[in-house]
Image 1 (cartoon, helix red, strand yellow):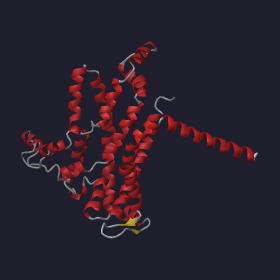
Image 2 (cartoon, helix red, strand yellow):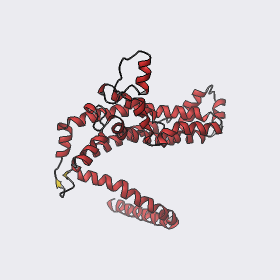
Image 3 (spheres, rainbow, N blue to C red):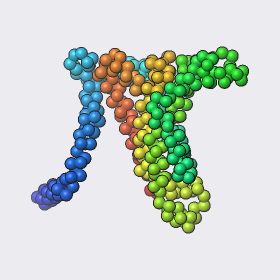
Image 4 (tube, helix red, strand yellow):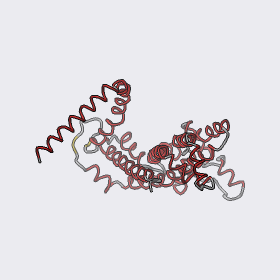
Length: 314
């Protein structure tokens, strides 16, 4: 019995090797074309992740050689760093509020825009995608929420008699987090929005005709029973973009509310990483923070992927 199992195992191994060699001979040109991308992906994605994991177990100040520190960086992170707790709380608030709302808002906008005429559709798509396309255009919000009488919001509220003196929207910890949520929602129509537009335009219209025959009566039933199940790949890709942007909030906060913000009111995990890496040069500790953020993003992506993959399978 054991001899038969070993023989079968060797045969399967030979078949796999033959299959790989045959695929390599048949698709050699394709593999060669993919090689530059694979090298770039390894050097700029895989290698930095592996380096961060390795450095997270060391003490490294960029002046001396790294020294092994075990899990002391992680213990310090979870037990002694009170600012990290604030950063995690703010990051989760941004992720929970701006992530799902931005995701749904992007899809709803894409759904409505897809119903427009082709020419008008392109113009409206560009208008909604412009905030993400323009990069630092969010600086306009610094003028809108300026803390003097010339700020748009202060000027408007004072003219109505709602407030008697200017409010420091970006500097006051009471308002900073709410203002940043508004800004991030305004910027949420990013790459995921274009993905939804592309998915809606690629829909097979024969499915809608078949659905009408099977008893689907309105557009919302079409959306639920036909459109969403057929857009799984686009929904998954949009979720990846949304999760990445939701957990990578930081630069917008530092640009609008300062770095660090008053009482760390808009301090995020990404800003915490920048603080310890670019200001204090504690690269080992910064790497530990980065690994924790990376694992959190992977966990959220896994749960989202599992949920969307099971859509319509019942």
